[in-house]
Image 1 (cartoon, rainbow, N blue to C red):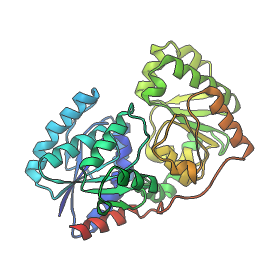
Image 2: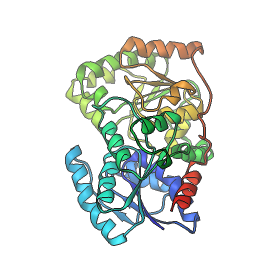
Image 3: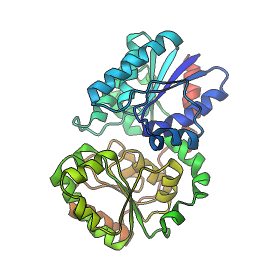
Image 4: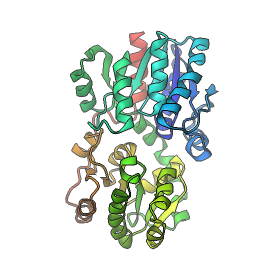
Amino acid sequence: MKIICVAGARPNFMKIAPLMEIFRQRSEIEPYLVHTGQHYDEKMSDLFFRELGIPKPDVNLGVGSSSHAIQTAEIMKAFEPVCLEQKPDYVLVVGDVNSTIACGLVAVKLGIKLIHVEAGLRSGDPSMPEEINRILTDSISSLLFCTEQSAVDHLLASGIPADRIHLVGNVMIDTLLKNREKADKTTALEEFGLTPQHYATMTLHRPSNVDHAETFSELLNAVDVIQKDMPIIFPIHPRTKKNIEKFGLKERVAQMTNLRLVEPLGYLEFLKLNANAFVVLTDSGGLQEETTILKVPCITIRENTERPVTCEVGTNQLVGTSSPAILDAYHRIQNGDFMNRNIPELWDGHAAERIADVIIIRS
């Protein structure tokens, strides 16, 4: 049984790594790895492949960066010949990036069954490109693997037959648990001169946060207060960096002497930093999940989340984008009076094994 596994952007790499490992162990499955090249620089791609032990892709489509429409179209054009040549039984896609929907569309139009890993997540915000990608990919998939019960509920409510839907846990947590010890051995804390529990980490990249000067400035009001308490390590996304200059915020950011802008970090380095942080501030999806496993307080700077289980049982607070709300969450963490420290169902490091079992049984 040949399965083309697709990875395209940095969040995909942590999800595809345990699947490739398990598939290669199962004699019933012949995996074929396609890297679309949606993220293509060394930090975003090559380093992650090396750190996570992902085999060299069988093919790299090399599409690079562009607008959503152009990037999606280029991926489709490049992926179709691969499917025609390989004639797989399945195409497997993960997450919600442009590579996910682009390769999914190519597969089903060629009559190839589609597998979606991390299916059913919903933010309820149609202005998010990822939300559109999720909904469309789920609607055309033959097998849908879910990380949490809310995702199962969304799929059932949309009319997808129950026998296609499987709650299996979270493959990204498989990767975290496997690499935790390796990450602990890195020297990231020493390199940045940090003391455990006496610093924060932060990621900000969503257009809703950094593409609007007023919103971005409001977020920086809260960041300014927090950085006076402790260092904030901020691996900066290219979009965010560009907009700091575009909106005339460069001098203001420079005056925040404890806000330390750094280049994107490798997976192991950033895992070490997040695991030892006092708090993580983010608009990422994956970090909401990782901090729940690490039992590190997380402040999610968004109006919605597609991962509600991290708020229900984990360490995540969803606070919106106002400075007072962010600081209120921060002060609650200082007081130690908000946190759950439980682990969601099936987030145990064995999701990829369950996925392989289902695929083999169903084939």
